Amino acid sequence: MKKDVFPATMSTWIGDQLRTGEPGRSEVNRHIMAVYAGPIRTYYLGTGDRWLGEPDEIVQGFFADRLGREKFFADWQQSGMPLRRWLVNAFCFYLKEMRRRRWRDGRAGALADDPVTYAGDPEAAVDRAFVVSIVQRALETTAQLCQRDGLGEHWQIFDAHFCRGRPYASVCEEFSVDRARAAVMARTATRKFRAVLRDLIARDGDHADLDSQIKSLLGTIA
Image (tube, rainbow, N blue to C red):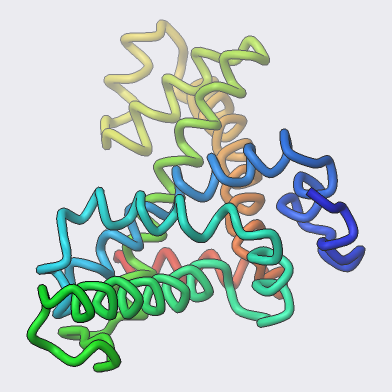
């Protein structure tokens, strides 16, 4: 993979990884498949093209086709779009290509170049699925970081109180700490979670006012 395919201005985590060559490219692809498979699957299920195949197979076929293209990420950066929008746009073209092949093979009644139709608001649906996916990824990563840093109980208290909705009284009894100590431990894990979440959203390509972006995205699932 030629490193100069990725412009120096691509200074995000994705750009940094891509400039390291194939190992970095593989890491980026793993990240994208982990975070964006759910949103793209959600989009596919809202289209009129569901007859093309099973959702997971269609999404994996899309990733296999697009992520290996040399200029795929450089073209994304030039577009100025958040990555989730770029991927959905690319997925629409992929669906049209599949329909065109089916049409040539005589296995599709619709015209090959008909637009992809979607029931409802596709951007809102993708945003909701993206938030669910990225928050889950952030929780998993934060748990790993806390374990690595010897903060396993901090994570467990955060998880019990904020993720599972248990009152501090119950949590304090389980972990044999007072409420003030439990709150401090939970805040430590919370700071790590927020940092991870900010990083993951930054990887989507929009670095302007991340706090506002996080608030707006989280509002889509409120």
